Amino acid sequence: MSDDSTVFIVDDEIAIREALDSLFRSAGMRAISFGSVLEFLASERPDVPACLVLDVRLPGINGLDFFDQMNELGIQMPVVFITAHGDVPMSVRAMRAGAINFIIKPFPDHVLLDAVQAAFARDRLRRASLVAADSLKRRFESLTMRERQILWLVVAGQLNKQIAAHLGLSEITVKVHRAQMMRKMQATSLIDLVRKADILSRNPADLTVH
Amino acid sequence: MMAGARGLRYRASQNWHYPIPMQPVQPSWFATRSSLRPVIAAMVAAAIFIADTLTDLEIAIAALYVTVILLSVSFAQRRGVLLIGSICIALTVVSYALTRSGEPLSGGINCLISLTAIAATTYLVLRIEAARVAVYEARAQLAHVARVTTLGELTASIAHEVNQPLTAVVTNGNAALRWLASVPPNAAEAIPAINRIVKEANRASQIIDRIRLLARRAPPAPSRFNVNDTVLATLPLIQNQIDRYGISLGTQLDTSLPNIRCDEIQLQQVLLNLLVNAVESLAKVEPGTRELRLRTARSVDNVIVAVEDNGTGLSAELDRLFDAFYTTKSEGLGMGLAIARSIIEAHSGRIWAETRRPQGAIMQFSLPIPAEPSHSSSRD
Image (cartoon, rainbow over all chains, first blue to last red; front, side, top):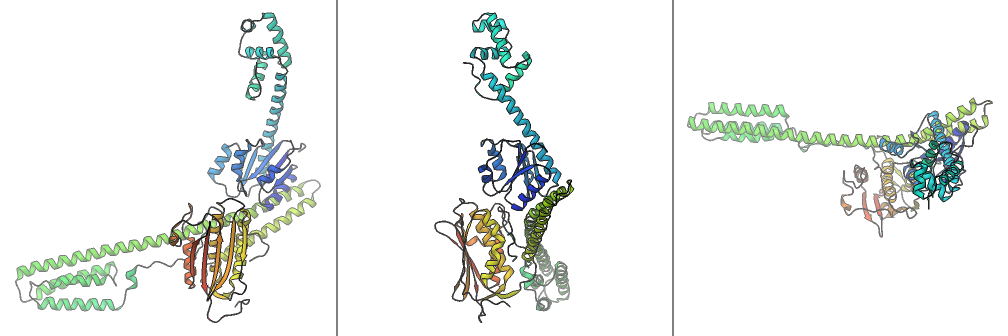
């Protein structure tokens, strides 16, 4: 693999950590391992596509409980669980919470490697959409208040004439603002603008008009 | 115990049970069976027969045959009791025919009453015996269930212990194959991976050895040894748990202890049980405050071993703690301490529990020091 995607391993057993580390490196992946969740949290994590290989039974906090808290802690990476004593309720809980896979030890190497690859793919996608949403947000922020008003009215399906009446402007002025807004948003068509507005509204940031 | 090997890891939520063969529970009436009883019964029957034949028809001596039937349960099985009941009935009829004196009508009625009494007694006695057999079977089944469950739990524990090194072996093996399959083969990475395989495979086999030793179903083999050695040999078995929960462990061993005489493996089981209970209790309290103390001491002619923890402590029912099937754990069977007590008492010792102030529990057992003291450092 050519990119710098990294596997983070959290397992309290040193023998398992060493083995996993060697396995991931032999498959051409970067791996960093930790003996506990606290060690993982305290570490400096590079901002790259990542996957967390998490043991369920850990000292201190249990892997499943930590998974539930990851969102609040602002850790977004996909998780692959590995455990020596998994049962059905545990795996259901993990998969429902959005884990990539729940793997019982010992496992065939390709099961784990495939899961990690899938995790990387998901994380890359997430990061890409994050970047897209971010640039979209910056474009939106470059709009004037008037242009923002017009954007939401256009997206709401109003015609220039209606928008003009609504805002108490002339139709010509609306057209000028609208063209400016379309240019700043790099929207190629009305459909494209609607799609972009949809992405924006899904990222609850400052979308205020006033 | 293997020095340097990683300790066993027990499932924290589980009670720890030992596969100790249980004594079959014998119903009480088997125990009182004696070869004299059939003779006594026959003599009683003969006496009743003679008396019944010699007395008037109206005197229902035959009703006394019920004593023979009641006696018969103590030595005969179901068929035997039925046979004896039939014989009694036959004897009643025969002596009715042989009796010369008395009024035949009222005598006949009395004879019928006697026969009814004999038949009813036989029936009831058989019913009672059937109920006793059912109770005996239920107890035997319960003992069997307990054994099987214990075995099941032990298996789960072994499976887990062996799974960890096995996972490391499989993963390292796969990694080594990949390193060797790369072009050019990467021996610098493959060799450490293979070394780790050897190390982990040895670890697995040590775990198996240790569990085999624990689960050995050998009869108790008393030997002379020092309790301190047993304590030191048992601690590695639970060290991993102690580390896992960040428990601070203190040992205070009286080095002047004389040797005692008992089955060391069984003693180890008792000690391990107390330690596992203490760790489980400590796991429920605030991390960082968990303390486990192990003490050995001499008290007159006893050796005392005490396991002290500042965990959640004991519930109020201290006296029931050692009863079989009494448990405060959601997944426990309530067998651990009952077995511990049976082991200690089999060695003429005593085991007891105390509540520790301000919190926690102290579990102690004492074992008698044999009459002729032997050197504390030697074993035979």
